Image 1 (tube, one colour):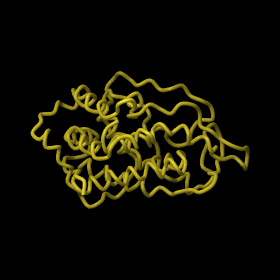
Image 2 (cartoon, rainbow, N blue to C red; image 1 turned 120 degrees about the vertical axis):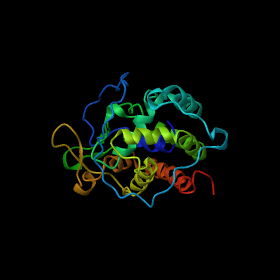
Image 3 (cartoon, rainbow, N blue to C red; image 1 turned 90 degrees about the vertical axis):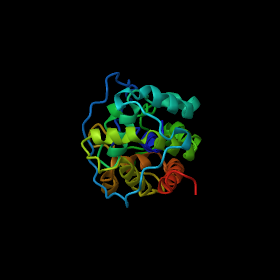
Length: 260
């Protein structure tokens, strides 16, 4: 995945909202371009504006390809960072996918056709029935490889790659309808803060199934954003590990991309 954006979008943006009760086939990444258009639904207050991180010295002055032609250069850079985890990421139109995913995390749902990651294998795991129904303890295992991916990527290299290609992220953000004055970096930092604020649940998470999809029994949890719901659904241990990596990235972004 890439950079600050991908790490965020990456492992949280696996499944949206409530999941179906039956297993669904793995989604096939569309070959067509990700069409421009703002589908974000989450309104959150941005932090104090932070300047985007400067690219690494060795890439200062680099002429980047146009957004439509960026798959080769960006994909090569991302693949070099991902190593054995590369199969989890959808490379085609990856910059757009990351921007759309990050922008939608505070909203009610995530556009799965635009996801930067392959979906988790297997079906959503549930324990109990009726009033005793809850997320099964072994459901967290479906997210393990994404969490391992997040932990395997050094935060400094993730942010450096993000900084190197930042003009492409900004171009994709403006393509959604935001003006040049609106910086994707500010949205990214705000979304990281939003995910870090996801409630930490101890004990089983109760579910209901009014129709096909499972919902959180607690209306307060069901009212959370798509991103915060996934933080809960992935399990306490996984969420704690993901939040630790997000804090590292957040600190680097606040420091201009350079370790303190």
